[in-house]
Length: 470
Image (cartoon, rainbow, N blue to C red; front, side, top):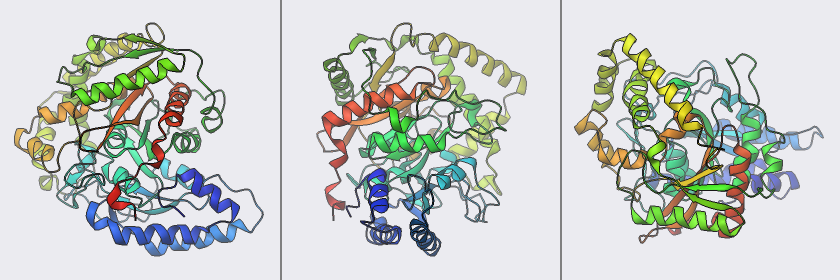
């Protein structure tokens, strides 16, 4: 079996009897043994448990019962997600390594999809930076160039999939943490709509979501059907699609107005190759029958972005279950202190302003355009060791490099809109360059269909980092 197969292709091979779940798990564990030291993607292993789960999955194949689509396919879990019996350090030195007492809701849905839990992937402390580096587990590196970052905070997940250590990986996104790593490592990264994927608490004023990083749009669509099974105890839920995502993504989208936004909402400089990749994406969609209209980033509220990053996220650090927060990265300590110094009355007024600004911004979708295309990142993939060092030096969130990574991402979280990064381009150094499609409220179906049309045109699933091809 090709270790760079999509999760859907692995699932079909298992169902057809071409390979067993045990053989699949053994293949990926062997590749982790061989390649993980180079990238540091997998930071905790449960080889015995996943092999036992694979044997049980193999036995179930002969039982004649109904099985979920991804039966027997292994998936590593991001080290911000709790699994009963596994540690969840959240990438910090000041957090416990004790086994967690229960699963996060997304883990139950991952298991119900048929996936086998295979290890844990690295994350920056608290998911708080755009690179995957921390004092507990160290630096995760990009399989396309080991001197570059796979971005963050799902960089361990994206590095694992890009290096062929897993066919799919769990991820989460509170400001671009699925989309940035996907762009940096040549993968597909879908951020679902607000409340599409249930959680016990929708963190960061309901801006966070769980998801996956994948090789193909099919994997993103099929997985979303399982992750989005409703939770009757949640405050609210996203409206169900007319048809399952895994059935509808292959249908061509009806003619749409594609907004093309090349300037960054936060005003930072956009690297020419990033802008060119977004333009190429728009032209490909135009050739497929859609209308492209230029859009200025001026409608994105910089005040809402400031409140989200400086007020909401800083305050949310106090929800991380630290045993000893003094062991945190210096920038984490500083941002926790920022939140402590802000009265709760000021927090409430800031969040009110952010919500009102969101209503004004969301109104542009379906009125002025249907889907917004932009670069995923405003910069080429940065070197390792730079962004975390800058964050720890400046402390207050004013890092220019952080700003260029976040530029096109955080607003989609604030607005709760579905967004997907797809690997459209390549820079002069051979690293992937992503383009982002942001859909109308709760309309993952349309952006999945557009992404699928781009995948058929560009055939990116076959691209692999040369150093990991064997």
